[in-house]
Structure formats: C-alpha cells, structure tokens
Image 1 (cartoon, one colour):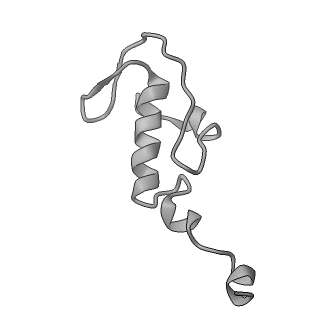
Image 2: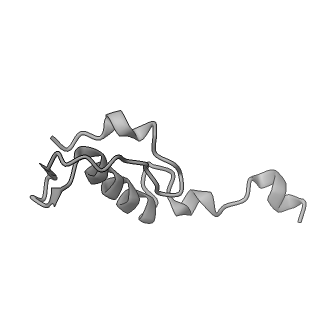
Length: 72
C-alpha cells in the first residue's frame, strides 16, 4: 500500500513530483488519508528530501562537485 516505487523515477531532486488531482483516496502507513497515491508519494518523497534521504535530498544538492570546489 505504501510502495511508491512506480513514482520514484518521476521524482525531481528538489522534492517535487507532478501529480494529477483525481479523487482516489488512499491511506499511508501512519493512517493519514491522501487524495490519491501519487500525492501520498509526493509527500513521502518531500520528507525524504528534507532529511537528505535517498531521493536526492538537499544535503547532496547544495554540495559542489570536487572539481568546482578546488577552482574557486
């Protein structure tokens, strides 16, 4: 029920997932209801990104590649 793997490839590193707004209610593992599965996954991915999770969180995004750091 909480498997968001089908949406992970559409997820952008900035914590965004574009979803439609169809009404197909679904509950996450905590019991919170969401309008549809995509929106549930978007919220999950956003939380992961905020804490630097596996979805390309801000911890990685704000770091310059080694080559750029040495040239500054």
